[in-house]
Amino acid sequence: MQDKTILVADDEMHVTYILTFKLQRSGFRVITANDGGEAYRLACQHKPDIVITDFQMPVMNGFDMCVKLRENPETARIPVVMLTARGHKLSPTEMSRTNIQYLIPKPFSARELLAKIAEVLAQGGVGGVGSGYADGSEEAGA
Image 1 (tube, rainbow, N blue to C red):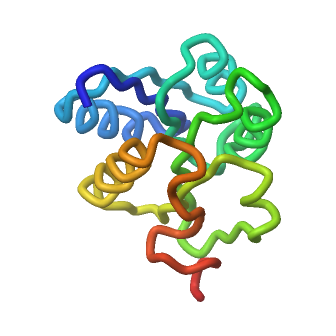
Image 2 (cartoon, helix red, strand yellow):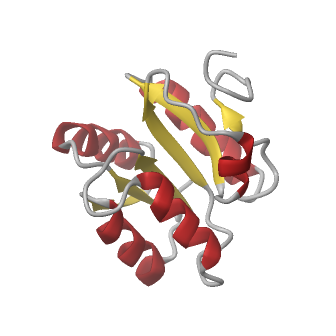
């Protein structure tokens, strides 16, 4: 995973710090953003291999940022793993408007997140992985 870049977007500094630490220890280059607007700008500028984003963030939430990424031809194929509050749901229609490959509820396991990142990257990004929740269901709680 040496030459892979991950954009981490979360407004909770401790989450950003922990993710950056774990991802760098796993050999990734990491770029961080504190809100959805900054994340979108950085994604357009750096074209990361994958985006890890929180749903609830200031300026622009993670879902709206993912929609913008999908609509921009330069970022349309960047896969996303979204971190959500436990029980938060996105419909299949909402998911289809984005490149979200997995929704992972907080609190999350760093090991599980790293496994999902590896899976998405091994599949070559968008399209190779079934979009859904980390537990394999179509909707949270299903």
